[in-house]
Image (cartoon, rainbow, N blue to C red; front, top):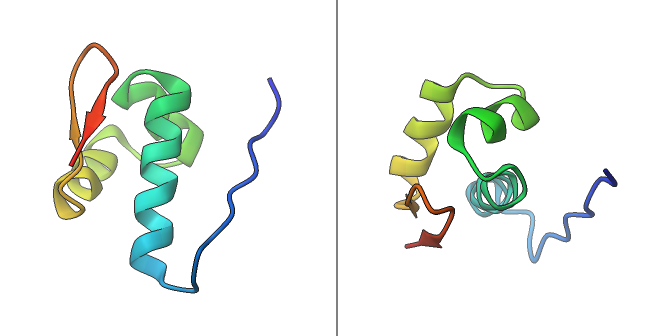
Length: 64
């Protein structure tokens, strides 16, 4: 599995955190696996998803 390159549009920390969350969810397909990729707990990732208003469904699709 190759590591994707994250290109930031700005040096905005909130935007970078949102991009990382979205990238991890898309890559992993589940909140638990995405949290492992990011090195945080599932609960910490869920808090960030809520903070950034990222809606994730069990079929792996994102909206928000």
